[in-house]
Image (cartoon, rainbow, N blue to C red; front, side):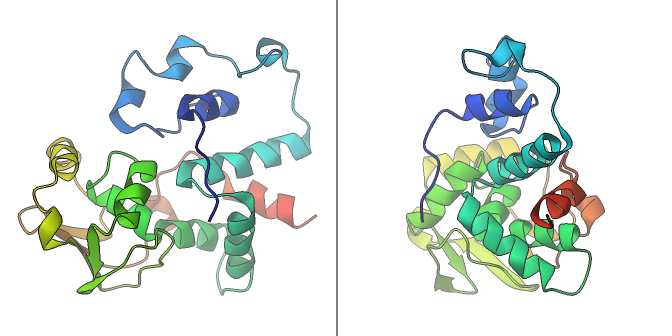
Length: 208
């Protein structure tokens, strides 16, 4: 599956807000948005007012970039959400939150979703006792994610857990720091998915 490999700060600057794509760095003075509060490119400082379509497009791009997925895959998630019972926009975010790379990041094993994707691809995690190296693997309620025995001394995971210990895991995840594992208890509600996005705009964009 294709993935974006360019500079992450450029994405945040394009959306005009912090997407926290680099983890802790986004809270420091080194944050690209803090240093240059305008969009990247030759005309970044002279962009005009967005149209209704432009506003909807930017909201969709923002969600794509937060979760680190490409357009084709994102469209697939939307189509699945549209055929699932419930509010389409909310179901879309819930599908994205169920991704293995996202849950690994939420548990604190990775500093950001890009790093979580890499750790998953490199076979560092088990799901219900079986090795899974597919970042887009969708977890179900009750699934247990844990670090494989050979990776329990991995310095990257250890450093990330030391930082994540202070912020804790979200309410829909039970985390055991000593056992290096966590349980995906249930699908989160919209209120628990604390993202600065208006998913209804994405529904309107794809409904045209």
